[in-house]
Amino acid sequence: MTKKREVDATVIVPSYRGVDRLPLLLDSLAVQQDGTPSFEVIVVVDGVDDGSVALLENESRLDLRSIVFPENRGRVAALNAGFEAARGDVLIRCDDDLVVPSGYVAAHFDAHASGDPVGVVGPTRDIHAPSPYARAYGEDAARKSYAHVLSRPPSERWRLWAASCSITKSTWESIGTYDDRYRGYGWEDVDYGYRLHAAGLPIEVVDDATAEHHGPARTTRARSIKAFEAGAARATFLRLHPKAPIGAPAAGKGLWGAAVRLTASSMRSRQAVERGAGWVDRILPLVLTPVGRKLVALAVEGAGLAGATRSSGDRGRNR
Image 1 (cartoon, helix red, strand yellow):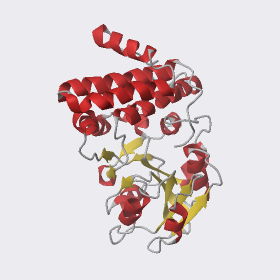
Image 2 (image 1 turned 180 degrees about the horizontal axis):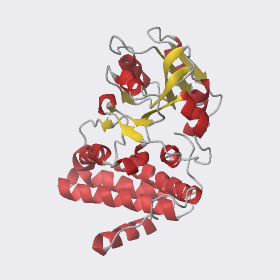
Image 3 (image 1 turned 30 degrees about the horizontal axis):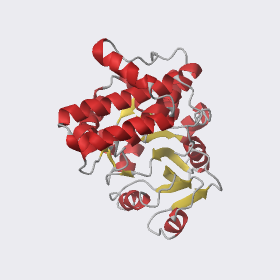
Image 4 (image 1 turned 90 degrees about the horizontal axis):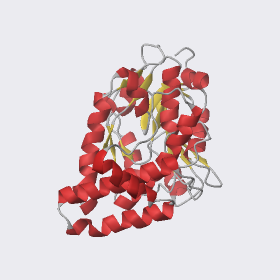
């Protein structure tokens, strides 16, 4: 960091239909601990005013600005607009469904204190309300995902770039914007993490910035749709970065692999994913938890493989 800016940090929040999620995030940002570096918040309302604009206009606790798109343009456009408008030295990307700890801004800011370029990841913990899906799959997946974040070696941490992360303004100006060739759900973050990695920047995971994620998928249907769209986005990433150390998607070997491939073959569109995963949701309350976990995993993995290997022109841009 060189030239002193107007504020120390900017928290950039992309938001689509976020009126029910934003209050928890804003509440947590409003109670950052004493001594927190000065920071502003920029919320980018992505084209649908569901009451979010009035909510933000009435927020008086924070140095907050909003950018309102007249139409839905997707998360990449929202991120780029927020980053470009930021006044801070440290730019913190924070999704609208997070609840952050009181030391969140300070933890991100302090991780850049040396002045050496670095990418910083704040881990997130999925928070699930009790449900058949949470019991069978969601809570277990959340534990494994969090353990995965903490266990990644430095050479693989670029794959963790996601909902809570930060760079300096100078790094943003050097690396450039998020790639607008990602139009559906997923992988625009991983793409950016890989570009940081390719530029020689280390990626650090800062446990003190761990946030609660209150917006994970709540059903097999929702989780499978995300997997389907992320599968297609993964294919985009591989086309853009053919030398990246990520292999082509595979179902695996043995009976499980055969079952995943068979499931994928039945999921030729988003509508097919919704139908198949919806069937799993209907029977989850009726089966034992281990059986339910396998059924959800089969739907999610099958959807991911289908999205990666088939054209899916009906993928929406809403994020």
